[in-house]
Amino acid sequence: MRYAPPGLCLNDFAVLLDDDGTYAVLHLQGPWTAEFDHLRMETSYGRATSADLVRWQPEGSVFGNGLPGRFDQQAVWTMHPVRLGEGDAGSGGGVGGGGMAMFYTGVSGLTEGGRPLQSVGLAYSERTDGTGWRRHGTGPVVEADARWYLTGEHMGWRDPFVVRDDESDGWVMVVCAADASLPVEASGCVAWATSDDLEHWTVQPPLVSPGDVDELECPVLERLDDGSWLLLGSIGATRGVEAWTAPRLRGPWTRRGPLGPAGAYAPRVIAAPDGSRVVLHTTPRRVGLSDSGERCRGMLCQPKSLVVPGDSAPRLEWWGGVDGWLGEETERAVLHAVGDVGVPGPVEITLRRGEAGGPALVVACDGKDLWVTGPGGERLAETALTEPAGRLRILTIGEYVEVYADGVFVLTTLCYTGRPVPWTAVSEGREWTIPVRPVRLPDPDRDDASAVWPGPRGS
Image (tube, one colour):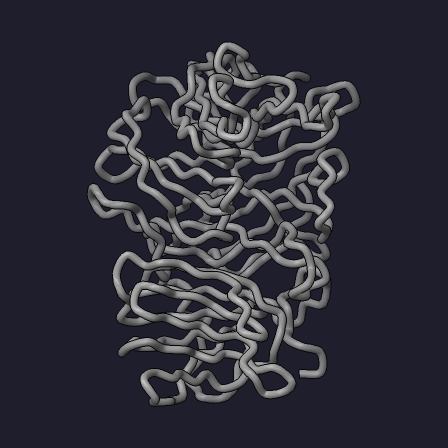
């Protein structure tokens, strides 16, 4: 339901689907800490497998730093593996037998100002399960071009994502970069490059450069059923994801706004076992698993359905594949639960209470305004809906809270305070108990730093 490797946290990731229907996640991994050291953390990729995108089995590490003196000697960051067909690969391998090519971010060291020097490398594998990688050469295959992008201080050249070109027999790569024509604080952009053979790339001017984004991370390209394209980009300042659409890869790209709430980050799109298109994403935690802890890298969340309705903004909705992990309805106190609430008017739903009996976790909605409060009524998260909500769905797994308004994923937050109680709603002077469906955790007996928060001590 939520996953991180034993004893570690999980950051950016990629999802593979093998021929036998097994999913594999390759992910960055590191210790639970707010202090992020570019050179000592995230120096390897972990791997986990799943049959349903919900229960993940850790499989250990599969890739790490390069040898001293190479472009990836200090850290390896976000990756994107691509399935190969007959004759796709260059001299690195895979010709005649398929396999995979993995493009990945390498960090060689720091600039004088302490910023990471980034470039993109390539590795091949004859397998399709996310293992068996061997590097192509000792240097990167594509670097930032100073004609259009910042290099050195304040540079960005990471998070590659590669797809087939829709106008040739070649390939297109998008990369997180910094537009050299804009002020540093607003230079976040999506760069792109083209290649005929996966190994030799020609850098192009920015594909998308909003002009109001500090960092535009983890770009994802998805070909839609009508042949048009969806671009997802993670926005550093808001810790949310925005969407763009275009009739073709080269644009013109139309900005569609946020896809899901802040806190849902670094998405990937994959076909679910039922054939639907879903999005997985990361969510943060807090150091020490307490409300006073600093936010830190976190966990992989359960999938959401990706809905792209014609010419309007894409959205994330509840995915029915989670329903098999839900128990029968109950009105008892449950820490991990899903509940549905009609919204007849202004409503407050209490999910947990503190030691003194006061509310410790409350979801409230008043017309288009939706918010979550913690101990003492502190607002933990809030949003303005486009239309008044008629129904809310709330999910809690440990400290993690998700809220859906009329099926759409609109809010998420963290709260480590309070004991579970029967959910109660109050609206216009009327109070009632909300039946909930308990969530069955895939690995309830895990007992390490990355296990799901079990609630307050002694509960």
